[in-house]
Image (tube, rainbow, N blue to C red; front, side):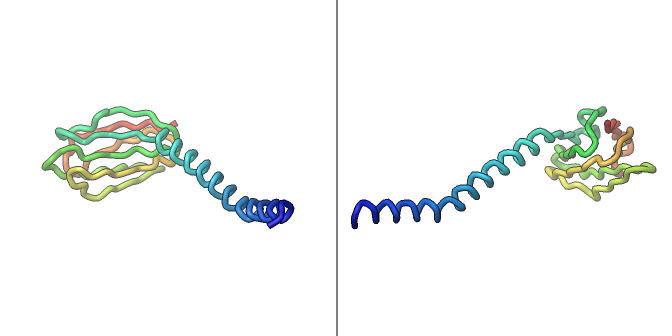
Length: 125
């Protein structure tokens, strides 16, 4: 193969590979942005000893709060009932994680349907 033929083949290979290289770079960038967003919204509330930890929380509208049943032998059942926002987790097994996206602004009381003394106040800005 001559030097000019080699340059043409080399040029063709690069042109064929360019879309794949761009797709990989774009995919990696999107992955990093999504990972940063997930890490930034990692708010966890522990349910242990028939209490929420913490028992008071302020979040931005649209943020996700994950309720973790940290009791080894107790069921929990998170719910919110208000005029503007409702949520019901159903029964939560020990070790389970239940995400709630707070989509409305306001102050909400989160309760446990099994343990009536469990209360958490969430202020959504």
